[in-house]
Amino acid sequence: MILIAPIKTEKAIGKIEYENTLTFEVALGATKKEIKAEVEKLFGVKVHSVKTFVNPQGKKHALVRLGKEAKADDVATKLKMIA
Image (cartoon, rainbow, N blue to C red; front, top):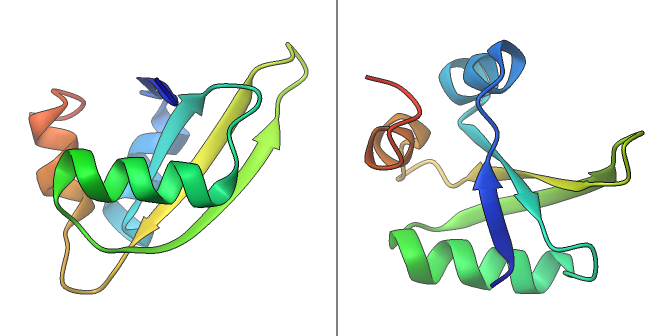
């Protein structure tokens, strides 16, 4: 499993609302292409771009920006990140 958990911080919720971007904790060895493929397969959406970084605690996070036709709000609601 590449996606470990969605990130539910205030900053991550803001990215959903204003940037159409979801934030996930991902496996440390996951590549951007693998993350993109898994998000597209699991949620049936088109991914525009993926940015990754390793936080100071050593966990890898991915910022997944969805295409214009997909709404991050809808995916976040399925994940119970927002009501």
